[in-house]
Amino acid sequence: MITPITTLKLQFYSTTRALDSFLQNMSNLHNLTIDMIDNYLNGHEWKQIIVEHLTKLKTLRFRMPIYGLNSHGIEKEIDELLDTFRTPFWLDEHQWYVRCDWYSDFTSSSGCLYTLPYAFDLFTSAVYKQSKWTCPEDTMYWTFDRVQKLTFRTSIKQPFDIHSVYLPNIHDIKTNVPLPDKLWSVIPTFNHLTSLSVSLSEGDTSFNLQTLLDQASHLYTLMIEDENLSALRVVSRLTSVSIRQLVFIPCLLPDTHFFDDADCAVFARSSLARQCEVLEIHIRSRASVMNLIHTMTNLRAMTIYVRDDDDMQSSPVKHLRRNFLTRKTNSMRDGLNSLWRKLSIQKRKLGTMKNTTENDARSSYNTEPELIEWLQNNTQRRCWISCSSGWTGDFYVKLWIG
Image (cartoon, rainbow, N blue to C red; front, side, top):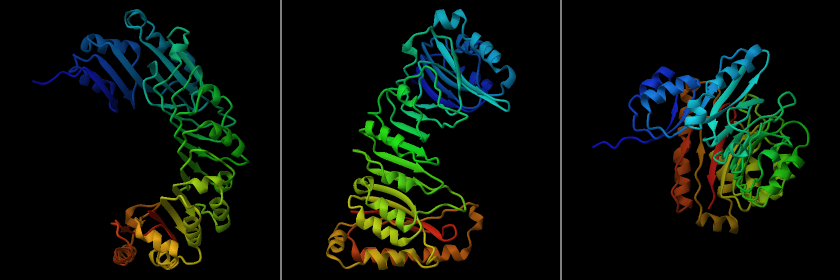
């Protein structure tokens, strides 16, 4: 006997007609949560589906994108859309309320329509600047306690402006700095924050960012995206009681910036570097790899994107072996006894796989036997290795340090 489905959560990518057809077979459904990716329904269309197919439905939660609105008359269109959710079926019979956030300029318009309270873990406030709703003016509907991830970007032309929203349970933020002052009124506490990803702008942003770090006592991961090489200098001035993972995200363009020896040396002596356990960084010189490994004493895992301008063609495996892995010091011998290193030199490319030549592949694969043999002779741990060419003059290396 097949147990009828009473609770359903799904993302729906197809047409509204396909949704109607799909829900015809869900007559026992009590709770429906649906994230529609490509289309939206108005209140009359939802009512028809519910009355015809979902007569037992008690809870309805949805999020729908709004596209194709007339930029010159968008507010009128939004009002007409919301009016379809202001009927007795929605307000009196079920007490289901909706909210619409939207943005419009001379060239485009878009929005998002969702039920209240908000039912999803990700809340994006990239461009939406206006909001209207069908619920009473009650603060209980403005507390989005299910939201754990917040994504937004601000600029002079598009300031941070979330209307009547409180996010008390944020674990993950993706944004750019400097941070907007209004962020502190939207997020009453940063005690739950564990991951922060920021894009840097020109100028000194460390003070603004430090204010947040001082209030985020459980923040573990800090990710920095930067196009002008200020990331290491900014991070070197920051402090945190909890950050243990630092990720510097390179801009994947032909002119990708790689940090030089001087920047790496300053960073390695910083407060965050000394306590860092997991690091991902893009550097210009292989000498900086050795400096970071030796200086950052708490490091357990490391991903290094390397571009060595002085020795583009030399084997990265041989270089690591010559300059770090076979160094005969007491500390290194002690470290090798418990070493587990996983080294992976993997393809990074801007084009397609068709651009890889047979010579590149043959050269990459030839490094595997040498590395495997060396690891077998010097460690008691297993190692998994994959090698291939990178884009001109660079590669990346992963190391797990025991």
